[in-house]
Image 1: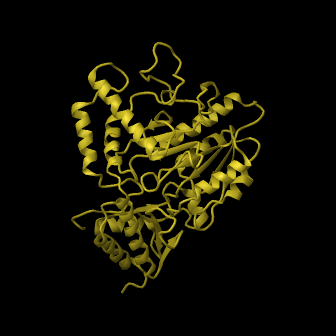
Image 2 (image 1 turned 90 degrees about the horizontal axis):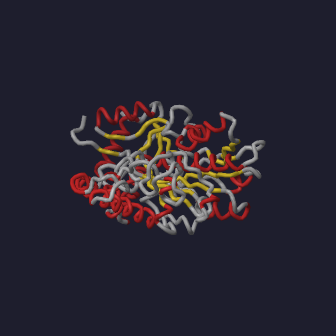
Image 3 (image 1 turned 30 degrees about the vertical axis):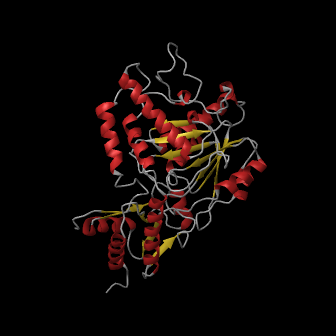
Length: 401
């Protein structure tokens, strides 16, 4: 096995993190580690300031109208659950008992979306329509509109597939949906795009935007955010379309047994991962256009190399145009998990093999229960590392001598 790890699993979590991330977290633990919002002393105030700064930076990153509309979460799955449970519970509280809320979702969604919705559907609490994608992973606006009914309350769209890397045409898609219906809440899962590509929640008219701190933003795990639009949570709190299922202390309203009604406290309960958000602040400050350009250059090198190998099937778009730094492929005669294990054991190369928490998409592209091998370069990936990876793949190809 190689002495040095070649890490090509950045779509799962980025590594290595910028040095400043760990330094910021150590500084927080040493000098600022009070409980934010739960005390008037200096450490508590400084911890609160860290959260305020993280909120400001995330809001600015996605062009939110104000920082208060950026809810700090424990990751993207947490944000997705907060949004889905919140919208469905709010709708059920006001809807006539004889009807059920309807949700439109797609085959490209992550299990964080699909399993959450499936739980409601199999409990006969909602109806759900799953819209297919094409062979490149695109979901088309007309099929989404055709799936809507008079009871549709929520539509979920991944900004980019964690399997194929295909980036959806979100602005055009939402524009078409709004022309059909202004009231449907539209959630865009930005787990794979935040930090890689510009996102404009106001310009694109997004209602709910969950994002991850530990992927493209290169921050710590256990950090994320959820943007909530005025359509989803109006300034008139009595008309909120997002119900907070998580109850607990906020530090901003006491005494009383009711949760606060103003954002962000209305959707935040408990002690936030302040040390993680200290690291996320540093990660966002370290973001540059050059980082993403490098990742895409390395992705192009992967694609170009794999295209030259016999017995290799690449899924989705043929070039880096319209994709994130993610490539899915298979090698004839090799199970993707066996490829992953061999790369790890014999070459010290970390990739992902399997269905990547998106089983419906694998069904759609014909990779079924076996899935595929996913390689995702990062900021620390070098051309030499990609060449080592390609040499290793070549040894597994059927025509290798």
